[in-house]
Length: 142
Image 1: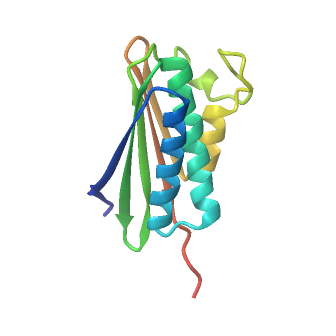
Image 2: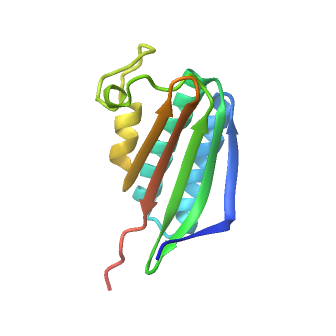
């Protein structure tokens, strides 16, 4: 059974680009502590960067929670990003490569999804968006 080690929870408030960098660093640090490889840690950090940047650009602010997770023998990181912005009117469309409402490249959400092991998104117009990312350390060969 999966267990979240809540004593390891870290909260980063996202208001501007400097907070995006803090969230990226926290993701990388926690991933490393949980035994993710350098490549896995960088993948998680990149996904967190995309989500945090979306919070700044589209919602004007929010927060990201980082938690250690253990599902013996696996270890990993759960990231919950949430905001109270305008929400995403069409999540399915927003998850398509190339779709952008702010003239970006449109790879943020779909790119983040590809970089993690599990990706969930909930959004409600006028009530904000919550994105949950989960990344596991790869099993080490003996």
